[in-house]
Amino acid sequence: MAKIIRKLILLALIAAAAVVAYVYDASVIPTDDVLITNDNSLDVQAQCITYPTKESLDRFGKLDITTWNLYKQSGEGWDDTLKQLVERSDLLLLQEAQLTKALNSFVESQKLSMLLAQAFSFDGEPVGVMNLTREPALSSCVFRKAEPYINFPKSMLVSYYLLSDLSQLLVVNIHSINFTIGLDEYLAQLRIVEAAIQDHKGPVIFAGDMNTWSDSRFETIKQLANRTGLKEAIPAADSRTEIFGQHLDHIFYRDLELVKAESIITSSSDHNPVKAYFRLEKKRPVKVVKSVK
Image (cartoon, rainbow, N blue to C red; front, side):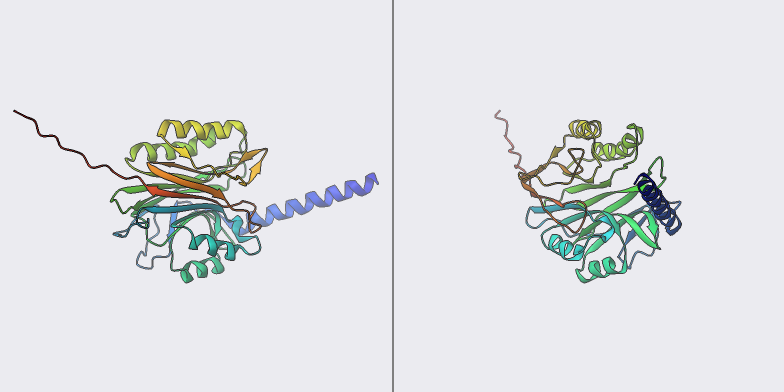
Protein backbone atom coordinates (compact mmCIF):
# COMPACT_ATOMS: atom_id res chain seq x y z
CA MET A 1 0.00 0.00 0.00
CA ALA A 2 2.83 2.36 0.90
CA LYS A 3 4.51 1.71 -2.47
CA ILE A 4 1.28 2.52 -4.30
CA ILE A 5 0.90 5.79 -2.37
CA ARG A 6 4.53 6.74 -3.14
CA LYS A 7 3.97 6.02 -6.83
CA LEU A 8 0.80 8.12 -6.84
CA ILE A 9 2.61 11.01 -5.15
CA LEU A 10 5.46 10.72 -7.67
CA LEU A 11 3.03 10.71 -10.59
CA ALA A 12 1.24 13.73 -9.15
CA LEU A 13 4.53 15.63 -8.81
CA ILE A 14 5.53 14.73 -12.37
CA ALA A 15 2.13 15.87 -13.65
CA ALA A 16 2.40 19.13 -11.69
CA ALA A 17 5.90 19.74 -13.06
CA ALA A 18 4.65 19.08 -16.59
CA VAL A 19 1.81 21.59 -16.13
CA VAL A 20 4.21 24.22 -14.80
CA ALA A 21 6.61 23.60 -17.69
CA TYR A 22 3.76 23.93 -20.19
CA VAL A 23 2.51 27.17 -18.63
CA TYR A 24 5.99 28.70 -18.69
CA ASP A 25 6.59 27.51 -22.24
CA ALA A 26 3.25 28.88 -23.49
CA SER A 27 3.56 32.21 -21.66
CA VAL A 28 5.31 35.41 -22.69
CA ILE A 29 5.93 38.30 -20.29
CA PRO A 30 6.14 41.62 -22.18
CA THR A 31 9.01 43.95 -21.32
CA ASP A 32 6.77 47.03 -21.37
CA ASP A 33 3.44 47.81 -19.74
CA VAL A 34 0.86 47.66 -22.55
CA LEU A 35 -2.76 48.80 -22.50
CA ILE A 36 -4.97 47.01 -25.03
CA THR A 37 -8.23 48.50 -26.29
CA ASN A 38 -10.84 47.56 -28.90
CA ASP A 39 -10.94 51.11 -30.23
CA ASN A 40 -9.69 50.73 -33.80
CA SER A 41 -8.92 54.44 -34.05
CA LEU A 42 -6.08 54.03 -31.53
CA ASP A 43 -3.28 52.36 -33.47
CA VAL A 44 -0.75 52.58 -30.64
CA GLN A 45 0.75 50.37 -27.96
CA ALA A 46 1.36 52.41 -24.84
CA GLN A 47 1.10 52.36 -21.08
CA CYS A 48 -1.52 55.13 -21.06
CA ILE A 49 -4.24 56.34 -23.40
CA THR A 50 -6.57 59.35 -23.50
CA TYR A 51 -10.04 59.60 -25.06
CA PRO A 52 -11.96 62.78 -26.07
CA THR A 53 -15.21 61.35 -24.65
CA LYS A 54 -18.14 63.56 -23.67
CA GLU A 55 -20.54 60.84 -22.50
CA SER A 56 -21.04 60.06 -18.79
CA LEU A 57 -20.60 56.62 -17.24
CA ASP A 58 -23.65 56.81 -14.96
CA ARG A 59 -27.34 56.76 -15.88
CA PHE A 60 -29.05 59.87 -14.48
CA GLY A 61 -26.99 59.64 -11.31
CA LYS A 62 -27.22 55.84 -10.90
CA LEU A 63 -24.02 53.85 -11.09
CA ASP A 64 -23.88 50.03 -10.83
CA ILE A 65 -20.43 48.47 -10.49
CA THR A 66 -19.38 44.80 -10.55
CA THR A 67 -16.03 43.13 -9.95
CA TRP A 68 -15.34 39.52 -10.93
CA ASN A 69 -12.28 37.29 -11.30
CA LEU A 70 -13.09 35.55 -14.58
CA TYR A 71 -10.60 32.69 -14.00
CA LYS A 72 -9.45 32.88 -17.66
CA GLN A 73 -12.95 31.80 -18.77
CA SER A 74 -12.22 28.27 -17.51
CA GLY A 75 -15.64 27.75 -15.91
CA GLU A 76 -18.60 26.41 -17.84
CA GLY A 77 -21.20 29.05 -18.69
CA TRP A 78 -18.86 32.00 -18.14
CA ASP A 79 -20.32 33.80 -21.17
CA ASP A 80 -23.89 33.53 -19.88
CA THR A 81 -22.84 34.86 -16.46
CA LEU A 82 -20.82 37.64 -18.06
CA LYS A 83 -23.75 38.65 -20.25
CA GLN A 84 -26.01 38.92 -17.19
CA LEU A 85 -23.41 41.05 -15.39
CA VAL A 86 -22.94 43.33 -18.42
CA GLU A 87 -26.68 43.91 -18.66
CA ARG A 88 -26.79 44.96 -15.00
CA SER A 89 -23.57 46.98 -14.73
CA ASP A 90 -22.40 50.39 -15.87
CA LEU A 91 -18.83 49.40 -15.03
CA LEU A 92 -17.62 45.80 -15.04
CA LEU A 93 -14.16 45.16 -13.60
CA LEU A 94 -12.65 41.79 -14.47
CA GLN A 95 -9.52 40.04 -13.27
CA GLU A 96 -7.80 37.08 -14.97
CA ALA A 97 -9.48 37.94 -18.26
CA GLN A 98 -7.86 36.14 -21.19
CA LEU A 99 -8.54 37.85 -24.50
CA THR A 100 -9.56 34.75 -26.44
CA LYS A 101 -11.49 34.93 -29.69
CA ALA A 102 -14.63 34.03 -27.72
CA LEU A 103 -14.19 36.86 -25.21
CA ASN A 104 -13.28 39.35 -27.94
CA SER A 105 -16.38 38.35 -29.92
CA PHE A 106 -18.49 38.75 -26.78
CA VAL A 107 -17.17 42.28 -26.19
CA GLU A 108 -17.84 43.25 -29.78
CA SER A 109 -21.33 41.72 -29.83
CA GLN A 110 -22.26 43.69 -26.70
CA LYS A 111 -20.80 46.90 -28.21
CA LEU A 112 -18.65 47.52 -25.16
CA SER A 113 -15.62 49.71 -24.64
CA MET A 114 -12.76 47.49 -23.46
CA LEU A 115 -9.56 48.27 -21.61
CA LEU A 116 -7.15 45.41 -20.87
CA ALA A 117 -4.00 45.80 -18.77
CA GLN A 118 -1.85 43.00 -20.16
CA ALA A 119 0.05 41.19 -17.40
CA PHE A 120 1.41 38.50 -19.75
CA SER A 121 0.23 36.47 -22.73
CA PHE A 122 -0.73 32.80 -22.75
CA ASP A 123 -0.87 30.88 -26.04
CA GLY A 124 -0.56 34.25 -27.76
CA GLU A 125 -3.57 35.73 -25.94
CA PRO A 126 -3.21 38.68 -23.51
CA VAL A 127 -4.18 38.04 -19.88
CA GLY A 128 -4.86 40.69 -17.23
CA VAL A 129 -7.43 42.95 -15.63
CA MET A 130 -10.14 44.37 -17.88
CA ASN A 131 -12.66 47.23 -17.72
CA LEU A 132 -15.90 46.91 -19.70
CA THR A 133 -18.22 49.90 -20.10
CA ARG A 134 -20.74 51.38 -22.51
CA GLU A 135 -18.82 54.64 -22.66
CA PRO A 136 -15.03 54.93 -22.95
CA ALA A 137 -12.78 56.24 -20.21
CA LEU A 138 -11.35 59.75 -20.30
CA SER A 139 -7.92 58.24 -19.69
CA SER A 140 -6.35 55.05 -18.42
CA CYS A 141 -2.93 53.64 -17.48
CA VAL A 142 -1.66 50.12 -16.84
CA PHE A 143 0.73 49.13 -14.06
CA ARG A 144 2.25 45.72 -13.32
CA LYS A 145 3.97 44.06 -10.38
CA ALA A 146 5.78 40.73 -10.71
CA GLU A 147 5.15 37.89 -8.29
CA PRO A 148 8.46 37.50 -6.40
CA TYR A 149 8.83 33.72 -6.81
CA ILE A 150 7.11 32.73 -10.05
CA ASN A 151 7.89 36.06 -11.79
CA PHE A 152 4.46 36.25 -13.46
CA PRO A 153 3.12 39.82 -13.15
CA LYS A 154 -0.24 40.94 -11.85
CA SER A 155 -1.71 43.97 -13.58
CA MET A 156 -3.75 47.00 -12.55
CA LEU A 157 -5.75 49.67 -14.39
CA VAL A 158 -5.97 53.25 -13.16
CA SER A 159 -8.74 54.96 -15.15
CA TYR A 160 -10.88 58.09 -15.10
CA TYR A 161 -14.50 58.28 -16.26
CA LEU A 162 -16.77 61.28 -16.80
CA LEU A 163 -19.88 61.48 -14.60
CA SER A 164 -23.11 63.36 -15.34
CA ASP A 165 -22.37 65.99 -12.66
CA LEU A 166 -19.17 66.76 -14.64
CA SER A 167 -16.93 65.26 -11.97
CA GLN A 168 -14.44 62.53 -12.79
CA LEU A 169 -14.60 59.05 -11.27
CA LEU A 170 -11.23 57.48 -10.48
CA VAL A 171 -11.42 53.71 -10.94
CA VAL A 172 -8.64 51.35 -9.81
CA ASN A 173 -9.10 47.76 -11.00
CA ILE A 174 -6.52 45.56 -9.27
CA HIS A 175 -5.40 41.96 -9.19
CA SER A 176 -3.08 41.93 -6.20
CA ILE A 177 0.04 39.81 -6.12
CA ASN A 178 -0.42 36.54 -4.30
CA PHE A 179 2.67 34.43 -3.63
CA THR A 180 4.56 36.35 -0.97
CA ILE A 181 5.76 35.58 2.53
CA GLY A 182 5.98 39.13 3.83
CA LEU A 183 4.15 42.30 2.80
CA ASP A 184 6.88 44.26 1.00
CA GLU A 185 5.83 43.40 -2.56
CA TYR A 186 2.15 43.63 -1.63
CA LEU A 187 2.72 47.15 -0.24
CA ALA A 188 4.75 48.19 -3.28
CA GLN A 189 1.77 47.52 -5.56
CA LEU A 190 -0.58 49.41 -3.25
CA ARG A 191 1.62 52.51 -3.15
CA ILE A 192 0.61 53.28 -6.73
CA VAL A 193 -3.04 52.94 -5.71
CA GLU A 194 -2.68 55.24 -2.74
CA ALA A 195 -0.80 57.89 -4.71
CA ALA A 196 -3.52 57.97 -7.38
CA ILE A 197 -6.32 58.25 -4.80
CA GLN A 198 -4.55 60.93 -2.76
CA ASP A 199 -4.02 63.03 -5.89
CA HIS A 200 -7.68 62.78 -6.98
CA LYS A 201 -10.32 65.23 -5.81
CA GLY A 202 -13.63 63.49 -6.34
CA PRO A 203 -15.37 60.09 -6.33
CA VAL A 204 -13.28 56.91 -6.26
CA ILE A 205 -13.80 53.20 -6.86
CA PHE A 206 -11.03 50.82 -5.75
CA ALA A 207 -12.01 47.22 -6.50
CA GLY A 208 -10.84 43.81 -7.60
CA ASP A 209 -9.29 40.56 -6.43
CA MET A 210 -7.06 41.86 -3.65
CA ASN A 211 -5.89 38.42 -2.48
CA THR A 212 -6.57 39.37 1.13
CA TRP A 213 -6.19 35.80 2.39
CA SER A 214 -4.55 36.81 5.68
CA ASP A 215 -5.33 39.20 8.52
CA SER A 216 -2.19 41.21 7.77
CA ARG A 217 -3.10 41.65 4.10
CA PHE A 218 -6.64 42.78 4.86
CA GLU A 219 -5.36 45.08 7.60
CA THR A 220 -3.03 46.65 5.02
CA ILE A 221 -5.99 47.32 2.73
CA LYS A 222 -8.05 48.75 5.62
CA GLN A 223 -5.23 51.10 6.58
CA LEU A 224 -5.01 52.36 2.99
CA ALA A 225 -8.78 52.89 3.00
CA ASN A 226 -8.59 54.86 6.25
CA ARG A 227 -5.82 57.10 4.94
CA THR A 228 -7.66 57.86 1.69
CA GLY A 229 -11.22 58.17 3.03
CA LEU A 230 -12.55 54.99 1.42
CA LYS A 231 -15.42 52.85 2.70
CA GLU A 232 -16.17 49.24 1.76
CA ALA A 233 -19.37 48.11 0.06
CA ILE A 234 -20.06 44.89 2.00
CA PRO A 235 -22.87 42.58 0.78
CA ALA A 236 -25.63 42.01 3.32
CA ALA A 237 -25.77 38.31 2.43
CA ASP A 238 -22.07 37.75 1.94
CA SER A 239 -21.14 34.88 -0.37
CA ARG A 240 -17.84 36.30 -1.55
CA THR A 241 -15.09 33.75 -2.19
CA GLU A 242 -12.99 32.99 0.91
CA ILE A 243 -9.56 31.53 1.60
CA PHE A 244 -8.48 30.86 5.19
CA GLY A 245 -11.73 32.52 6.28
CA GLN A 246 -10.87 35.81 4.50
CA HIS A 247 -12.74 37.41 1.59
CA LEU A 248 -10.61 38.01 -1.51
CA ASP A 249 -12.77 40.38 -3.57
CA HIS A 250 -13.66 43.91 -2.51
CA ILE A 251 -15.27 47.16 -3.65
CA PHE A 252 -14.16 50.31 -1.85
CA TYR A 253 -15.59 53.74 -2.63
CA ARG A 254 -15.45 57.44 -1.79
CA ASP A 255 -17.77 60.39 -2.47
CA LEU A 256 -20.59 58.16 -3.71
CA GLU A 257 -23.84 57.17 -2.02
CA LEU A 258 -24.07 53.40 -1.55
CA VAL A 259 -27.57 52.00 -2.09
CA LYS A 260 -26.73 48.33 -1.53
CA ALA A 261 -24.13 45.65 -2.24
CA GLU A 262 -24.48 42.00 -3.12
CA SER A 263 -22.44 38.93 -3.99
CA ILE A 264 -23.64 36.58 -6.70
CA ILE A 265 -23.13 32.82 -6.42
CA THR A 266 -21.88 31.22 -9.64
CA SER A 267 -20.10 28.07 -10.78
CA SER A 268 -18.61 29.88 -13.81
CA SER A 269 -15.44 30.81 -11.91
CA ASP A 270 -13.61 30.09 -8.66
CA HIS A 271 -14.68 33.59 -7.56
CA ASN A 272 -18.21 34.92 -7.02
CA PRO A 273 -18.94 38.35 -8.53
CA VAL A 274 -19.44 41.30 -6.18
CA LYS A 275 -21.77 44.14 -7.12
CA ALA A 276 -22.50 47.56 -5.62
CA TYR A 277 -25.31 49.97 -6.51
CA PHE A 278 -24.42 53.65 -6.14
CA ARG A 279 -25.95 57.07 -6.61
CA LEU A 280 -24.00 60.24 -7.24
CA GLU A 281 -23.91 62.48 -4.23
CA LYS A 282 -26.19 65.50 -4.57
CA LYS A 283 -24.18 68.67 -4.54
CA ARG A 284 -25.84 71.40 -2.53
CA PRO A 285 -25.71 74.84 -4.14
CA VAL A 286 -23.68 77.43 -2.28
CA LYS A 287 -25.93 80.10 -0.80
CA VAL A 288 -24.47 83.55 -1.25
CA VAL A 289 -25.28 85.92 1.61
CA LYS A 290 -24.99 89.62 0.80
CA SER A 291 -23.43 91.74 3.46
CA VAL A 292 -25.58 94.48 4.97
CA LYS A 293 -23.90 97.86 5.14
